Length: 272
Image 1: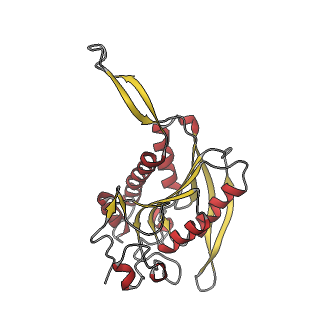
Image 2: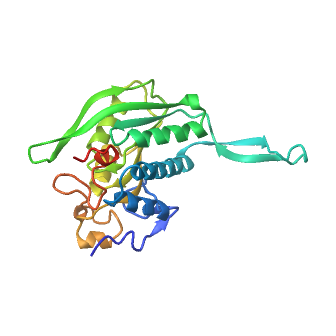
Image 3: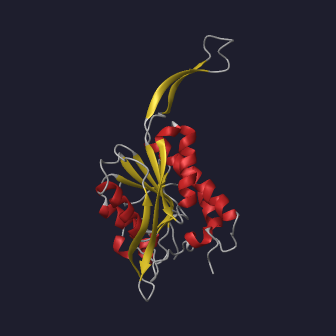
């Protein structure tokens, strides 16, 4: 038996129903899943890869803005105002005066972070939007098993107190790199962020467990697809998270199954 949660999806409030807790948001979006299926296929190569990644991240950051960002009531005139005294829109909009940082975790996160940064600048006051950069990679042993994450450099462009922090990273596999990056921001810089968001295209149960265990509060996961292809039949037939001990989405060298391959390599044409 294969995965059933996307064959007969159970959704509520635009999200896949699961047992991972309130900080995990698996967006139920058939169009995004269609694009993601195409992105994952071996026939998808550049420049189509980056076009699809851009489409997906424009949608994912929109979900975060709609669900999480503060709003305000405005009264603003429309083009009908010269013709009628009723030519005003009065109602809710996204509050533009919000401080946000998008964190580029190179190299798979370079394009996703830039897409989020540009989208945020279009909606918010541009001077309140920032992009930081972290050069990081997974560390493996002689058998290609992941043993941790190594950080080679950071460019932190300012304070983080009271800011929303976005971490756009396509593949949520082990969670090691992202846990290290979020811990750095939360514990080694002055002040505390307002909230942290992990924006992933695909996540595994192992990744979800890692982040929700490391950060019970203050970190939310937003993703389009949960991949747990190496789970037991019992788990694959049940609601995600119902049988955590039976769920597995990583192979022996910590690549996602079914997954999309190494997106850092795919996005940078570095497969050879």
